[in-house]
Length: 424
Image (cartoon, rainbow, N blue to C red; front, side):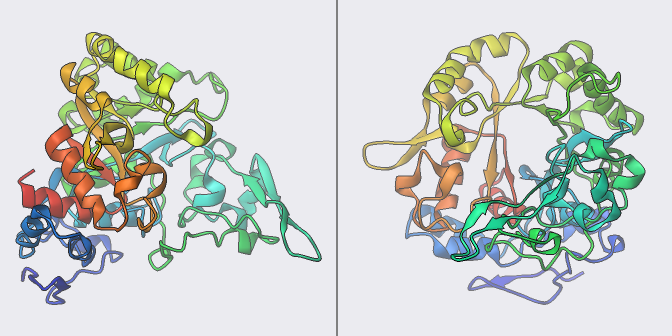
């Protein structure tokens, strides 16, 4: 099969594969030998300010590009594909993501499915446009607008959870780009909430996945797996289903599928889940990933919380002693600016390394245009961010100076390009 070459950052069309095509074109051998990055990484490199890094990255334009575990598909390739759908996962694998993520939650009949939140069906699927809308925790309520000015008085709302429906019902739904139109007065308009820097071009099918189906797909694609045990939105135990049952069921589905523990990076924001796996499933617990939201969860608008941030720095040796080998904060917690506005490792990053805890971080390509500082994910470096190419400068500090083991991205091609160029 011909391999594409790139000249002056223009994508050759010699053998461009249609990412949303049939599963049949995604054999393991094709995925591994024919990584397709598309034009975006080349656009970003071209957008960088003149620097030694830009010169180095430009020299890698001809590839070849290989799958890499440094590139983690965050909910698949969620920047342009409906998250946690088969199509999103296939696209991420085609872009060289060596690890794919299924966020795990459960249905009314306690079956595990891939969704970012137990109660996000109203923004990530078409449930409100189906008869299943009647089963939602909170039905659609239209927005109230000022009849004279058109200004929003009360936003449109709804709340639909996986625990509202059975697995069989869940599988009848179609995934869509995450978003909702808060000014909507009809369901049809409410579902039209895709951010302007994303697209609906690849949302025609949106095949939802059970956790077991994701395992089978990832195995076929030859990728590793990073399931996140989502914190339940319902009170636990749920009809006798305890948090421990939930954590165990997730691991059991890998064991039943014959997946060895070294292929799985189980994640949770709940430290108790990590400690459960360390104690009860030590092979899986060895590389379980503690997602750290303590650095922001008690702050207004989820911004950096100095108290939580400093507390976590002090806790690093204790976490290591408890058996935590991987920690994953948001990427802004790992960097800061020096007096000359250079991006440098943060005290948090230094503390994790000194405690011999491996670092993974999130999330690249989830912020839209970076011309105004990049928003939430760039809050500690916003004064050094003014163009899209700057994300590669940040990525270089995370990889080379902080020493992260991998990074979640909503568009894995960007990380795959960088990682291949740097031999990661």
